[in-house]
Image 1 (cartoon, rainbow, N blue to C red):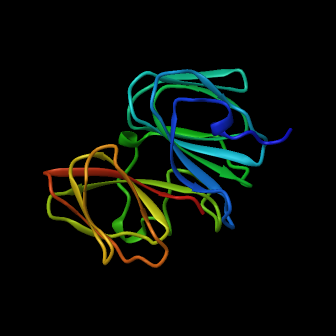
Image 2: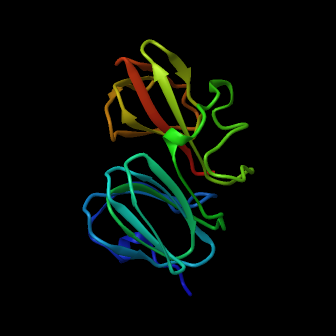
Length: 199
């Protein structure tokens, strides 16, 4: 079956980043309404999602998952149905594994190995998407990996780089370019964020 992207199947998405012409093709969307939709694809498409609002549901291969709460993450290969609000990374050319969980049930990620050793989405291999979740305290400064996205789930986080000085709030997402050296510093008492790499 030929791949049909999110853009061709639903109208309640907001395209955030489009890298379909890159070596590792992917797109990142925000699902903005609680409207059910089907993701039509093939086994070479894997979708990674971060639930933004309580009550989301997933139907996959005859199995119902949900309702899922804010803070849940998932990785699903191929075709599935989704209802809810979420950030979705659709990675073409990657046959991933089914994975799902809640970040609060996981151990904190070591800041020394944000992507190199640990990941919420397993297995971790070269060229595969990666998702991690970190919790930081006020004043803590962390250097971010290049070619990655930061998605803030709670708190106020200051992003600093030669190109940007931006205050990120909950549900903000920002791309760190491959040539950009960037750090984040938590301005609020606590900051929680996902780190995403498409490859």
